[in-house]
Length: 371
Image 1: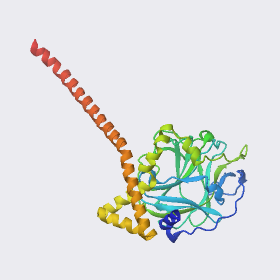
Image 2: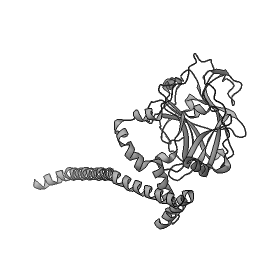
Image 3: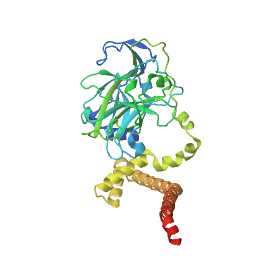
Image 4: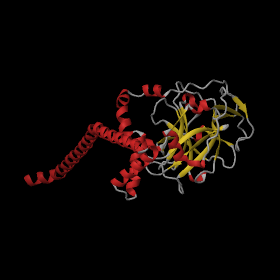
């Protein structure tokens, strides 16, 4: 299939997908553990996700930098008795990949815990894991608003281990930047948790959002076993995971204007369109002409399905681009009008301010001359 071919070209033979294991029911509960990565006082774990179960992977979705024009890509796949968070990081236009829980139908109360853990292992694929920034994020609001707390961590290498992240290690962020002056996340704030994310990025968790010194793009892979909460005391209760919202339910929960504009936005700003634009920019930077790019695109499509398939796909892409341009033209004109109006308002305000200052400075002199 087209998706399988895309995955094969993206990841190559570096990472092999193994057979999935049989499914088993999930019941989050407290489990007594031994020493956990240097935190001897951690005694109880409550598993939220067991990544060996294929049905639990369906409750996650990718969140890569294509949302901001990048070309990085990732996936979460079953690999024997665990899962692989794998992909390719690229700096052009972005520089991050992520996997996150689908929004939950009702909040998850984590306030009885001291923090979250991930049982994982960074694999020797591509650059060294220390050349990237690994993060976990917690969303405490039931929408796509920017109420997100992040914490960076170092995944273990050379073997499976558990990483514990106390809640107070998480800080409020806006994009890749820390929000200054905001206290760390508290356990009480996690009583309504709707999403947890795992991210690999070139951006450090800092107020400047600067890139990690020595960051290297390329393939990455991290094996995931479990994700959950930890505590120094037994949890007061055990509860099942809330149901994850389906894609249709998430779409219905969007604001009416967004639902109305979604077809247009998908046509103009959808992931395939953004990836084509990013590829075009890369080829332009290498000095290719429009004719050379057209020939290259035709050759790729013809190699995949023959001349007839290439002709059909080329015509479809042309019609899609023309339709997207026509539909987006009013929006583009409106945006330019708004920008122009904003500049005019600023110019008028600046001119009136200067005029008022000149009158104020010239007032006493004018009065003296008239006297």
